[in-house]
Length: 131
Figure 1 (cartoon, rainbow, N blue to C red):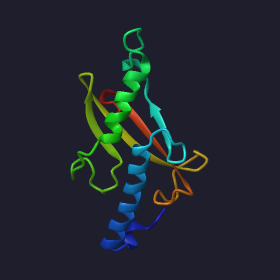
Figure 2 (cartoon, rainbow, N blue to C red; figure 1 turned 180 degrees about the horizontal axis):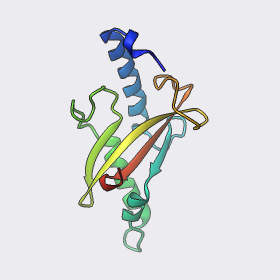
Figure 3 (cartoon, helix red, strand yellow; figure 1 turned 60 degrees about the horizontal axis):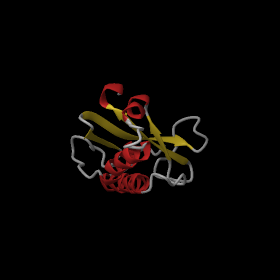
């Protein structure tokens, strides 16, 4: 993990921008395993309808589109500028998405989230009451 205490403000900003770009790439193409993995919690999965009139893929696609298109980043929800968290309403329920950084083997934290060669991004979509 980079030593942020030894980084200048400019270096920290550049680092956060690299991480943000990789996070945006994941959200832009949630089906590409090279960018990362998607996890839907039990609460979110329960909200996805599967009926004759509304097959599960309609709800799934709508949900993933919300996450992909999220752009409401602010100092409150993105204090480090990495674009790794979002909050939204879906079906009248407060929901979140968050991105975590694991090592390539998914056995621990990533040694460097700005390096896609050593990082597997995992985006989790969850209900706020599951956080």
